[in-house]
Length: 565
Image (tube, rainbow, N blue to C red; front, top):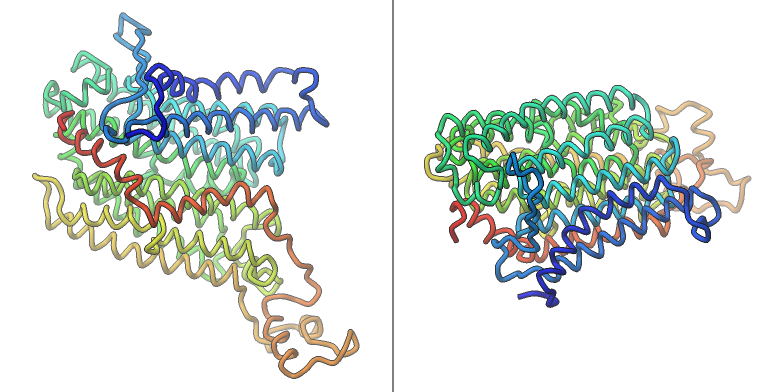
């Protein structure tokens, strides 16, 4: 079944277009704007160019999804297979199935929303031309990672995103951007070197770099020792990008320093590349090696779940001087831990849960970083103590729509039933309850219990953040200085005499907002345009999970069965 009937040749063109168009758009962004398209100034012209290119890619991705045969999601569709380097049997092999299609659409959507947001709120930094070009190169590399079906092309696409993200952090980031950018690039490059060795080992030992052929062979052409070495090498590189504890330490610094759109793309798209590699390459190509390391992967995953949650609780407590963006970054360590736990179960239930959690995390955490950036723009800081102090920072009173949306994103992140975050975590835990044959049930049920405990910790820190940022913190009058008390006390000389009820209400609110603090700007129209799709999709995925699971489940079943339905 397809939504619209599209010929195979057009499907091929659409997939190739969404991979190549951002790269061509990046080159065009660096050229002078043609006459008549300059707008009010060159900066506006290049930002409009970014919106146009990413919008065209999003439309192409939606049409590709509409033309996708939903009755056969396990079959590679829109395939292109052209010889590139005959001596190494490297081919330009593109295709999409039920596993990669949601990630392609998510990437196109988030990049378009970031381009739209940047058109109105460009981060401070050098030339907008370079900014737009880097975002488009980043989009091209990410889309290529999810579309290519050759191991060496996968590696090239995987590495293609590193340099653009490095410059986005180093040139358009905030405080400590240079150390954060260097840590990001060093961690990911070192992991990638090890990963390349593992990919070469698989290709040379099996005689092909074709991911479809390798998945169909299901590791039968590789000895167990080769599979173990390959999983160790490739898994390390993928684990850095995921990021898996304890290889996560680059992530909080990168998120804290990155501009808003950089954080959105890093959390919503780049982290998915690591977990996608586990599902697309290691599970089907080296099943024996994965079975050897699955208990260790699950153990690191649940430690990451608990560690990320405890780090968030530490940042959220009063007096910790925690940064809101840093807290959301640590929450990603916990959420991606659920994805890794689902993959480690090596079951259809667990892997489907991991893929669902991937998409849910991209939607919810992307929205959270948008909101954290907006809060920081309005207050000039993301420090939780400042936001929650008696400085008029309570969002419910000053920017109620912004506060309500932040609360919505927070409860979605903690896995509230009916929203997207719930299904991935639930299916992951179900998969851990009954892991694949050959894996220890007692061990995985222990991991399941620890993961379930992590969901409680997630709820704890998210609710603390909502209470502190959205409601503020009441400061008793006895703890205020005389000047603060005089500012917060309702004065009859300033206007009509207040009733006792009104005066008490004003006095109660004074602990979180001084009388002299101006009202904040609530959600701007361009912010609503960038955030509404993410909020809507979070609800749709939560209420109608079969749309996504109907795509991923047949593909996962075939992948785990070695290409057999």
